[in-house]
Amino acid sequence: MPRYQQIARQLKQAISDGELVAGSRLPSSRTMALELGVARATVENAYGELVAQGWLERRGQAGTFVSPSVTSGANNVANALSQPQGAPRPFQMGLPALDAFPRGLWARVMGRRLRLQTRYDLVMPEANGESTLRQAIADYLRFSRSIDCQPEQIFITAGFQAAMRLVVHTLAKPGDGIWLEDPGYRYVRPVFDEAGMALHPVPVDGEGMQIEYGIEHFPDARFALLTPAHQSPLGVALSLTRRHQLLDWAAANQSWVIEDDYDSEFRYHGKPLPPIKSLDGPQRVIYAGTFSKSLFPALRVAWLVVPQQLVEAFSRHTHFLPCTAPLLIQQTIADFLREGHFWRHLKKMRLCYSERRVWLEQALREQGFDVVPQAGGIQLVMRVRGDEREWVAKAREVGLAVQALSDWRMVSKGEGGILMSFTNLTSPSLARQAAKQLREAIS
Image 1 (cartoon, helix red, strand yellow):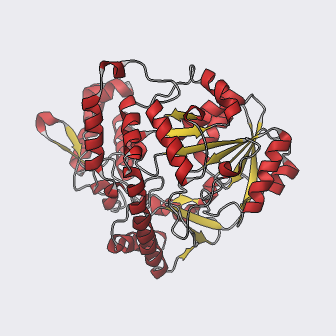
Image 2: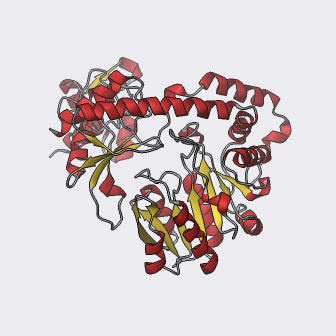
Image 3: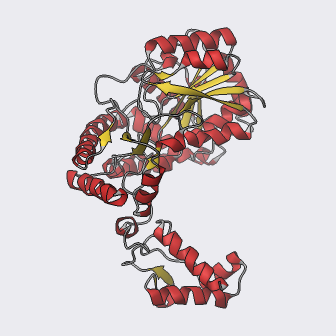
């Protein structure tokens, strides 16, 4: 196959997968040729072929663009391609309701902070995070999560993965074992792999991580990472009995528990469950949180609360792994917390998510799907008999951003499931449309 046809095929695949959305501008032929290491004429031929087929259109000196009317090779994915770049795809996980975030209020708070900045705000920020934000988080955790901590115990990081890297660099050494929920949050595993740690999968059931299994099979593990308030992805909560078992094991073994409290604010029935950190008499729990789910992911701001005896060690390591979150962002979040905007936003979002979850549950059931009940969170699980990967592949071909539960497993076996989010389904009709599209895709 000629090289220009290979390039054309790759571009069509990128458009079909939603990586190049309708209306997006392609690099100039000169730039693309340099990137691919081919002659400019080769790229021009590829562009010309796609223009002739209707995939691309030329706009004079403005350049070459993906055609606004383009659909995938299977004549679907129109939804995914017609949205602006960065728009959430149906069922896309890990995103809060972007339409419900008070952007105007956020802009005013940030604008005021920008106007009040002095020349001293232009120097290098504190390596462990801006002091006003650490104080605001400490106040918030004390009243909302019953965690009594001081600002010096809080370390701000540029996202959850950065927080885990700080933990690993401070406390871990190659060969250390870490309990991981199975199934569990898969995107953090590379952090521990890169550090040469031993990953120990621990099964999850209706009461959360099976602590007795971990003690029996991996008693000498140095760490345990879990999501006790709302297990990711199954949505169950770690029982009180197992919380105490976990703390007893950590104290006896001198191990560390990393508690990922990623979306505990969004519980629809009753108050949020108390975190393990609030029960941490032995001081073996490192508490991790993030603003990605409660505010918006582009912030890239997370935090750690470490036991008092670890403050000095973590402070030393922040000189090598300093917080890279922009100072203006940190200051704005601090003001958002201190002025009560964060509390009001969470209250609004709990109602919003409760409603949108019902919309999607009803729509899925109307299409004959089996939805697993959950008490909170911003995603849900749909039961599937057998291997669900084939269903997921078909759904993703039409632009539906569902995920296979099997892809979140390490070694455990169990019933199949499809993971999806409802946060950006802004009306019952959109929920019904997405559910219908899912049914049509897999039928």
